[in-house]
Amino acid sequence: MMAGGDLRSLLAVVAAVAAAMSYVRFVARRLRPGLPRLAAFVPVLAVLPVIPLAFRALHLRVTSGFFLGWLAEFKLLLLASGHGPLDTSLPLPAFVAIASLPVRRRAQRDSENAPRPGLGLVTSAVMAALLATIVSVYPHKERMNEYVLLMLYSLHVYLALELVLAFAAAAARAVMGMDLEPQFDRPYLSASLREFWGRRWNLSVPALLRQCVSRPVRARVGGGVAGVAAGVLAAFLVSGIMHEAVIYYATLRPPTGEPTAFFALHGACAVAEGWFAAHKGWPRPPRAVATALTLAFILATGFWLIVPPITRTGTDRVVIAESEAMVAFVRDAGSWAAASVRSALTGHS
Image (cartoon, rainbow, N blue to C red):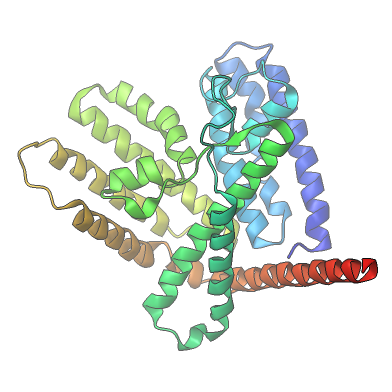
């Protein structure tokens, strides 16, 4: 649950980010893409990664670190070169939202009934109930099998990300008529690492990595297999470095290199997948088998290289404590609301 200090920090962060992005828009409308624009962005690029450290609550620190220290940085770098999702002709509130959150404009050609990224009400309720159930069993984690607990951690992360971004999508639609970029597309159906990382998991990240890293590297190396492989490896390496930063926001400990190793390994395997897929005549496993193997590989390597930096520092206990507090707050708020409704109905009867 958010403490009073973090509530004040949240208000200060919102004001600071709005001011910073307003400055970015002002500068970008007056300077051409290139080094002068990039130089003018440097103060904002320098301060954005520091802003999340204003929060004491881990969830706020990590979420804002992902939004500001990663996505916003990449968007501003793209804007400095005249590319990316930011458009200085947008109204200021829309520009600030797109710059600082994983938000995209809804195309005018989209109809009101067009599918929107995000979760439906029923799906959100089911996911929230499942997350609350997971949190409720954590007090008994000492008696759990280690691998069962790791599976619960993985499911916890996925559900929490889905729900946070679904809530943000609903808020963006209500306030500014915007949709959040879709973050997930049923990643549990992935039949390859390329499908998982490129088309199903945390989708705003690969979209930015393609523009910021893969394409420039590929253009420099040249076309063909070597260029594609270099672009993929570079994107995974940068992703690993950025995950080191996100985990730092969680643990507040120096990077260990394990997340970078995780993504370097996955990048190499993704390149190998691409090489194998290029041989059309080679046998392929059934999709169900490929999906099981892919998910098993992701979980096994994640337990090996992603989870230890978190559990080693006791950060998992902080996550559990904050999650339990949030679940208790929601439960108490629901009980209060139900009691208020009953009281009102009784008073009118």
